[in-house]
Amino acid sequence: MLLKVDLGSTQPLHEQLAGQLRAAIASGDPAAGEKLPPARDLAESLGVNVHTLLRAFKTLRDEGLLEVRRGRGTIVTGAAAQQAHFVDLARELVTESRRSGLTDDEVRALLEAQL
Amino acid sequence: MNERLARIGLGVVLPASAAAIAYLPYLIYRDDLPNRLATHFDASGTPDGSMTPAMFVVTTSVLMTIGIAAMIAVALTRRPLHQVAGPVGGAMGGFLAGLGSGILAITVLSQRNLVEWTDASSPWPMVLVSLVLSIAFMVAAGLLTSALPIRPHAQPDPAAIPVMALDADEHAVWSARLHNRWLLVLGAGITLAGVVYAVFTQWWILVPMVISGLAVLTFTSLRVHADGNGLHVSYGILPWPRTHIPVDQIETASVIDIRPKDWGGWGYRGSLKLMNQAAVVHRAGPGLRLDLTDGKVFAVTVDNPETPAALLNAEVARQRATSS
Image (cartoon, rainbow over all chains, first blue to last red):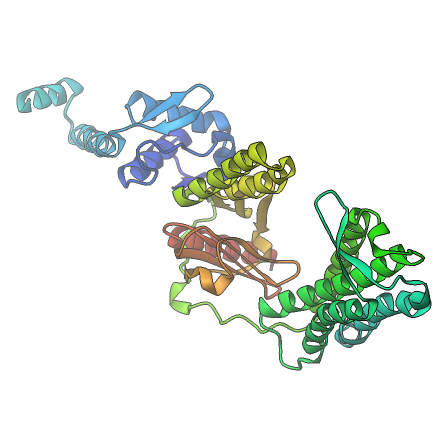
């Protein structure tokens, strides 16, 4: 698994990290069931605060990609790779539609119509 | 160490010391020895086999001569030594020379003044002393051999040296785990066999079996971690041993195909300190190769080695750019 952050970028670090993690999971490395390296080690290597990285972990946990087990560490969930792909598509939809001036309600309506 | 001194030490000093340890006690005390020497003992330490002193000198001399010949052969080799065979040959030569001379010397010293060989006392202190002596010879021969020139490694494949694009503000980390189920089965098998064998026969067999079983188990999982500080390898769940190669010691990182037979098998093969190369061989297949600034080579089997190789090369370039 490769993670990269750009300390000079305007995008918040935790968002960069969440994006990197999501992309890594979508590519299958780390695979479902695999344990992530200790957050402390990763944060130290990247030169970021460990809480910044844990915030990214939390985002992915809320998206159902990661599972945090007490005493066992952070594990990639069963359907994570597929899920990560849909999360990416959904983010893209939201970003693109906001850029073209759609309101959030209009985006919801658009999704509803497809369902 | 000076290469010439190392050759003299390995080819003359160690062989002469082994011969002196072996034959001086014999020459001094030959008239005080019984007609036969106790040379074999049962499990309780009672002698159950014997030889004439002359026969025993011949037997131990054969062992010692093989060792001395190996050390002299390494010392006389003018071409650079093979990376693995050279150091192993030198060290094993030292071990055999120490063992042969130690057994002869200790047997003579402990059995002089005996009337009958059956009066010989328990051999364990002698075994221990000969073992310590052989290990001392092995270490000395190994250190001397490590001062001799070693054949340089083939250059890394230039097509297999990727570099990652990293901006000044960008930081990257790469981490991977590797599991080997066969090693898990093997390690657990050895450990269990040791326990079972110990329960039904001699208890002491437990110690070597469990130690080797746990050593195998330690290698069943690897964590390899690359970042701006270099490469870290940790083994199993234990905090120690670990391998850390700092970025400023890396010349190039490249991708190789690791074949266990080229590196001497599976596990941690070689030694960066003594053999100028080391490899963590977990399976056959793709691996990461690091050529160090002092000419040594470290390799470790990982999946997708392109990524850590590219990352480390980028960090090496960055470090050079800032230091120059």
